[in-house]
Length: 283
Image (cartoon, rainbow, N blue to C red):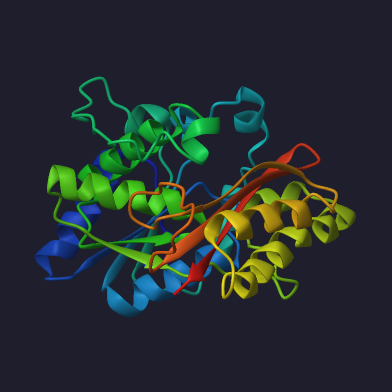
């Protein structure tokens, strides 16, 4: 089987995975919302290296969108996505409908995110992460993967999913993978398809700000670095939604003291396209 094998029903994919299991194959899982780019492909390459059978889901999840317009405009291009996967062996695509992911007998037990969903993205997109953990849990129940691969561009999402796995004692290992960037430094994202060339240029203020923060962190406190960074960012064309330096585990804002692994998370609007990014500030 190669990446052109597409399953649309839960029953079909479960039968295919059961057959792979009977052959003793390890199962890798790469969840996506489609509009695949090289960042997604890097996740697939890693999964193929480490697993003998890989499932890539392509599903635009309605429960994690706060803005109906954003859901409507999210790019959908299944044929092109499948074509990008054609050269991978032992890879299949699962492109289900909503009722296949959210059946009437949905077994999702709910997850107490203990405040991880109340900050950063969660503050501006209430309910978003409950939608994320619900859909990921349901996919985990279908695919039963040994390993699941997530990009660190969605840093908070990875933290939330790792929390869910611990809380529900799920038997899957989460593999966080580095953010892939364009040569310009812009983080790869399906949303970039909606940007004009000028907007892509304007959006480079995000990466420039993050890089500058790493240097400033050598001598300044988190509060001072964040204040410097907001001023720098606001000299550009984008509209800042938030810029925070946080503890990598609790996601709580850092003020006067640094911690190992401190991360800066940014969300901003480039025109009407919302972009997010992050960078490790204190290794």
